Image (cartoon, rainbow, N blue to C red):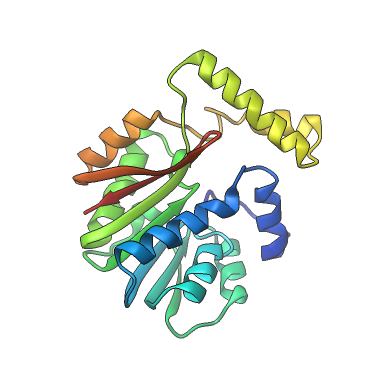
Length: 222
């Protein structure tokens, strides 16, 4: 996540995100499902941009986790995550993903709504760090806002996304402010660019895990 501060407790914070992102809970269900199929035992896991610790909370309850590292550049988010649960197999790291120094250490790395805040070169640096931190055969799973291929597609999808937020009770002004963040506060890229980027960072197996509205889940296998 970006370096936000928040007065919300974890439940309130996550509820606010659900009012903004369609099918937000599905992101986590899809991740747990594919991890459980691919490699269900004794996992080492790094969650980049962990925010309130939601990914760790879900994974620790449903999967066999040997070690889970929650990483976020925001000390406030790390503190919220730390208060959410206290497990002996969980550690907390305040760091930008571009500065992590792990090598061949993790079976799973997740980055949920993180890398689209970065420009191209910095995004590439982030993904290379994740690739470096994975063990051979490890899974990198990222969920991001993506860019439609056409201007008309972008217009339609942003309009649809705004309609979703209005239905969740957000004001017209709140919705418009959020939609106007596109390519100003976050910087989405197309699906084909996602694939090209992961390939250039070393991933040979790259697949779409899930897609809806303007959010996509992509997995890469080292």
